[in-house]
Length: 337
Image (tube, rainbow, N blue to C red):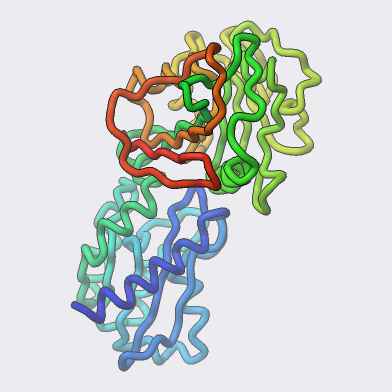
């Protein structure tokens, strides 16, 4: 078992390399071992491209060496034709002796079928190696599969006396430059970012990753009465895609019309657009709605040494923090639902 853990840990390290571009697919790593030597390894690099197993097989110069090997993969090999052929069938044809799997795929199109295909080919299958670590890595994917909604991260910055903005909605700048740069890194790692009407109106944010190298998230703004001016930075579709959420009917492809704008309805719509994760960076009202309806998975809260003495109060999460970090003087507090 010790060797299984060692090679699966390597597979997880590889899977992590797909964080920025694999979504909405899960991050998957694959390692092929023969005679206690890695002869091939790879990860799922981008959505629509070859899966980790295919890339790992292709990294082996002599494919005959895969016969009788042990293959480590962080997620059950797929058994259906999607954008790529089924990986379970590929492995079955190459006939390794064992396939070691961290997580069973909860996608109904797979959900054990890949394992059945491998076993039918006479391949020994072991599951559950570093299962918790692999599940945590792909918590966005499993949230979509198990809860039919994107993984939700709440984020805000507040002063040491508990305010997120002054009475005039001014909130620049509560957190320090290092904290703001970290936020841009987070944006690059998630599919979408969501704000409400007041945040868009008063802050006019671009919601990009300009301070970090990486893709821009899809931008979502709640504009129930369609009253936001069209010259706001986030409506520049040349920089990044933006969806405006309205309650009236529209044929504009950049507008999502909902009969009632609630966190639940909004998350369902985003899921249908293959958005696996969303950072909610709105004001107090938007953030508190997600908290009150228990439609969130984690919250990341910066607390600075700044004091406003009065203003718009920060959202309230009625539970103890799970961990805290120091970001050059700002406290970063993590909560998990």
